[in-house]
Amino acid sequence: MSSQIAEVFKKGKAFIPFITCGDPSLEVTEKLVYAMEEAGAGLIELGIPFSDPTAEGPVIQAANVRALSGGVTTDLIFDMVERIRKNTSIPMVFMTYANVVFSYGTERFIKRAAGLGMDGLILPDVPFEEKEEFAQVCSSYGLDFISLIAPTSHERIRMIAKEAQGFVYCVSSLGVTGVRSSITTDVDSMIRLVKEEKDIPCAVGFGISTPEQAKEMAASADGVIVGSAIVKLCEKYKEDCVSQVKAYVKSMVEAIGYDGADESV
Image 1 (tube, rainbow, N blue to C red):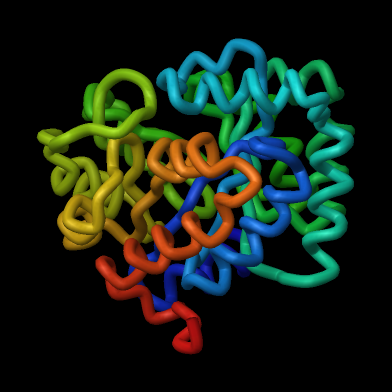
Image 2 (image 1 turned 135 degrees about the horizontal axis):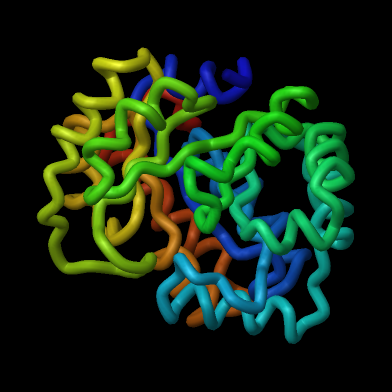
């Protein structure tokens, strides 16, 4: 496990926000990273936009389209991370799709990401059985390849957990990402199966949007991941979204009681 990622979960329940790079602009994305860190985020997921993001619901799909239409490229995102790393060492992971990594060149992509100080990589469209070509390269460059487990994969959870790195991304709802009014999945049993196999942090995502939901998920999970609700704020407020997102992240951090929060915010 990346020592940076391990450190996050030692501080308590981690709030992990997701944003789509370049929505509304890369300049705003950079400001959002600093604002979310100040609000107490433990780890940040940076989404690299892709034209066919199969795991995403309409909110994040639309953000991908806006970012790509605005001219965002993987190289421009790498340049942004280089700027960010001059100002903060907050753990960050990329979330994107296999095709983005393939088209850039798998080793070239992972080597560059690791060299810039990224801590992990999440590829939601790569099944466990096909992860090796990515996971091996990540391992050689010290980047955690983050595994996802779904509510339907009970018989596979132990197998996935055994080889998991960084943290396990527990998908709380069937289907694509998006805000949900309630979460009915038995997250507790998913986490229990992981922990029986390996002592590794479990963070729950997909569908969480309110402080109440975050608090409920954090009762059993080590972290809570939120994307669509934040991306909605970026869509609504555009260039003026930074203060809105910061206030939202702060409310979620307070709901789960993360010890790593900056008390001055």
